Length: 312
Image 1 (tube, rainbow, N blue to C red):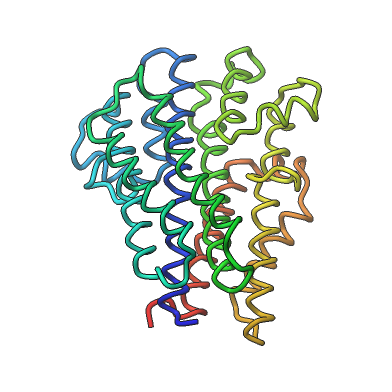
Image 2 (image 1 turned 180 degrees about the vertical axis):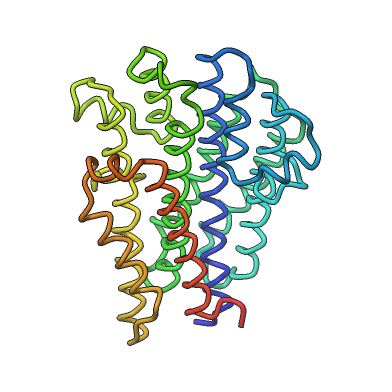
């Protein structure tokens, strides 16, 4: 496969995953804002977690709810807004059109058309839950078309690697924004406010019911962190994501008959996750652990681009 085609597939599915993840991050900020005083801290932290702090404050003075929501969902000057990344996913799909089934292309095109119309005007707070659900639904429809119609070959592998790299980054960031930024004071640890915010994190990654089912409703920071980082059964946990990343990179190595530095890097990250415990992570510092993971995950993405010559 040409590197340009591999790169188009990889980024197409990264962008689609990012659209859903941005919606989840906005939802987390929105739900947390409902449990906090209106001082704006939750929205400032959402901007920081999304990695668009500088871009946002270049055109805004304060991080209030409406300005952050508009910037993250529909601002074309923000390359990570939902409208921007869905447009980028569609453009990448057009470039690799011959590598996709008709169903995947049509689902991607429909995703773009639907969200373009839904986000044509600023989103009011009362309409926000409905719009966020629509974004998640459209992303899921493309993913369903991929699973239901594509051959399990290198095309599928690059799509899946892009998906799970982006998903791992999002889970780490959304967990970090709660623990490091959003908790207002040490005095709140273990309080009802603290527990409400931790449950909000579970909702934002569609894991609340699964966590409660496995833990008989015992909501505590260590248990939730362990679930989102180390549980192999949760589709958005870091370990689950890296199980898939290493599997699909392994299939590429078999297909092409060679391994690259990205294989060793992915195996190293996966090994550190598997060999870690939640106690060791908290001893190191959850924020420090997540910061290191995000850095290594981003470096792996860049290494994959180099090893498979995406821009040649």
